[in-house]
Structures are given as C-alpha cells and as structure tokens.
Length: 174
Image 1: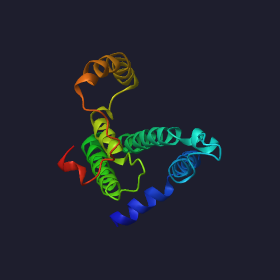
Image 2: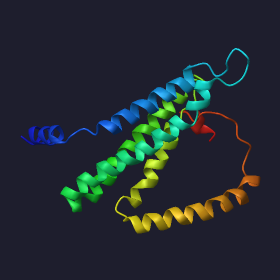
Image 3: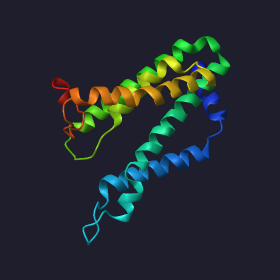
Image 4: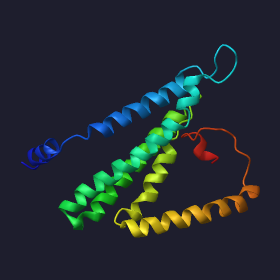
C-alpha cells in the first residue's frame, strides 16, 4: 500500500520539461567536449569545443542545484518536520555521486570526471537547505568577498595542480 501511494504521488507530479531539456543539453555538451575533436584541421581549438568546454559542466552544476532545491522544497512543503529525511537523501546522493566519480576516474579515460566535486558540493548544501533567500544572499555575498582573498593567501602554500582526476586509486595520496 505504501509503495502504491508513493508511486501515485511520483506519477502525479508533472515533469519539468524545460529542466529535462536543459539536462540533455548539458550532457550532450559534456560528451561533445570530451569525445569530440578538441582541435580543427588548422590546429586551433574547434568551434564546438570552444562553445561547450566548461559551459556544459557549469550548466550541469546549476541544474544539480536546482534539482536539490526542487527535491527539498517539495518534501519540506508537505512535511516541514522531514528536514532530517531530506538531509539524509541529499547525503546519500552525494556519497553515491562521489563514489561513482571515484570509480569512473580510476578508468583512466582522460576525461575530467568532476562527480567527486559534485558530491562534495552536495554535502556542503545540506546545512543550507532550510535557509531563506536573505541568509543565502548573505552567504553568497560573504563567499564572493572572502573566497578570492582566502584563495590568494592559500595559493602559494598549495601544491601545484597535477591535472589528475580524483579516483578510488588517488584516495591513498590525495
């Protein structure tokens, strides 16, 4: 009975077609960036790579945030006391995404796998899912002002980037 009710509630929610289309565009763009030709016949960056590189993953990250908001808001509107459940759902998604990224990164495909980073960002979203727009705006403004300075101060003390993709194998030597 509970499964039947759950299935009916999921079925009754309308799909957000625009969100699905945007996800498809982001995925196609990431495939084009990683699988398509990076350079054209003259040795310059190809037009396709120039258009999709970086933009597709940024779109995918924004859509991941939108999906977290939609998932959280729907559940919390129905049951405001379900904050713990929503946080657990986000944490489980974060760990699943990070684990998937760590295993894909171990394949050595040469593709920049950023799923581990997404998993970390999902975990960072957990404390703020109940915040209103004013607190989120304050956090954004603080991050905007503070993070460049912190980055500038820390950069000389960090090791040089290796370009290595995070994988299950690199967890021994992060």
